Length: 96
Image 1: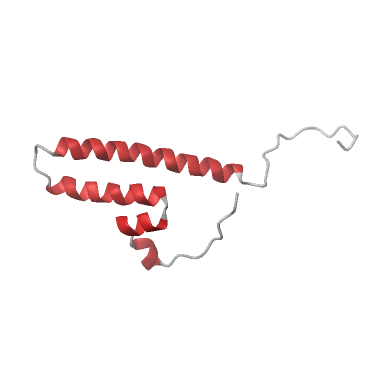
Image 2: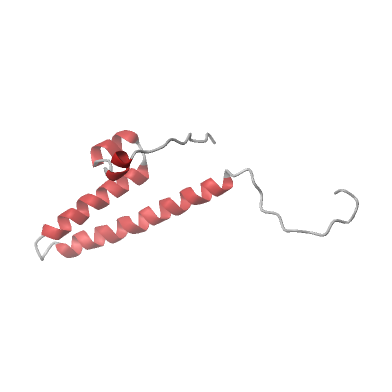
């Protein structure tokens, strides 16, 4: 698996989340779901009473999917680590 290089993100970049179109163009499924969640959340504020349950339901589904994707990515990051957690053991003098 290829490792992504890190770079410093300016405060300006961090403050502006990508639009849905930008997220789709990037191909990042997490960014796409987060952009969709923002759109639904913004719409929920001004939605008529009869459509609020639908928006709320979709928002809950997206939150669960986002949580799963973030969890999957954190597990992948842990698996990519070159540092193995080892239990301390007493040295038996053999060198092994």
